Image (cartoon, helix red, strand yellow):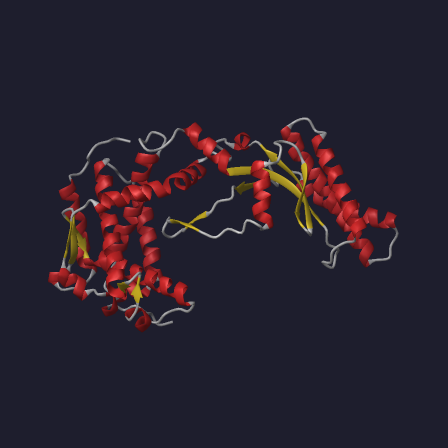
Length: 410
């Protein structure tokens, strides 16, 4: 990326703020600008939008606390984090406006440019989200506000790529990102063997021993293959064999037929299946699983927060086994829970890190975001906190949360 300042900060500030003046037709001239951040006049439409967002967040906080969705009056009379809800919501709106300006300033500082396609996509995004919330138009937030915000999301991505891309001062090399991928994700393939009968009841102890022996034979069958790809393909053969076994058992349980007839029927059934499972995809049936983590990222806010984890769950223990105990390229019998046995194998994830597979732009962008989103958020917040802010008291009074239309007719 070019590290050039393509447009003067003052010029872009004037241009962007001017484009917003027509978006709030009912707004008086004294409150068109909600605040000034680092010389950038924040339009009232933007402040109203973030006020509505702050109100929604306040509602979520109260609902989590009380277990029921609050009414507008409930929120109006509530304190959140020992702060009056009006102040809490407006503090949120103020913060988001500062974050917005920080993105504009950083985009300008790196000499960022958006392509015509990105601008078009941003406009489509704005139109879609504007249509989803009737409160926006009811409160004087126009399409120009939504376009400005959608464009800002693309600008933010450019800033992220500039600092955290492969050539960025805060990012990592491509090889380092590949190792991050390999450390946090695993490539596995498995056959799931049920310890329940066709009616969902646990099988007898003798049947359990027989099924475990079958699982061990399957693992041995897979491990007799020499190469990783051959072993992965052999898992498909094992799956077909197990499917035939299940079909035979099901037929035997439902019909009093001879074993020869049952076997023939099962073979005919899986014969048609074989033509569908044979594929040119060498990785058919493989799964990518993520390492256990105690954090979760919100898709809406990209914020990470500590979440409770059930370390006794079967899924958690299975992942721990895959990442810490299983031998690479060796099929292993694993007791998933009381009702399931896995014959599982883990392959080298690096084998799938190619441009036409798991090392394409979408995966690279996802991994980079996963690794650096918290750092980037902190980076922008620090930039925003350093910006000088002057509030328009008239606008803050005029667009106080409970003077807005906060509910829509269902």
